[in-house]
Image 1 (cartoon, rainbow, N blue to C red):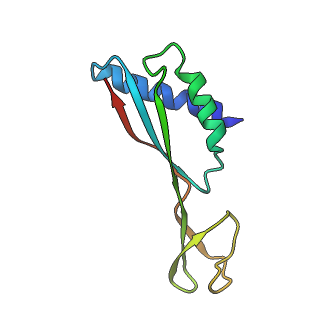
Image 2: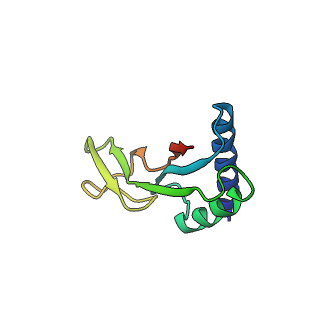
Length: 113
C-alpha cells in the first residue's frame, strides 16, 4: 500500500508549507491524481486521515480531482483518451503513444486558517 507513504509525504509537504507561511491550521488539501498513476483514491484518503493526526492538518478535508489519461499517437497524429495503461490507439491500433496527462500526483491547492 504505497498510498500511505504518499499520504504521509503529502501531509508533510502541506504542513511544512503552511507553517513556513505562518499559518496554524490547514482546512483543505486538493490533489490532482492521474488515471494512470496507480493510486487508489480511497486508500489515499484513508492514509491522509491517518497522516494528518496530531498535525496542523488534523481534520482537514481532502478533495481529489481525477485527471483523465490522454496520449498523443504519433502514428495517426491525434490526441486520444485512454482508459488504462498499455492500451493501443483505439483509432489506428498503433502503440507509439506518448503520455500527456494521467500520471500526475499534484498538490493543487491548500486552504489554511
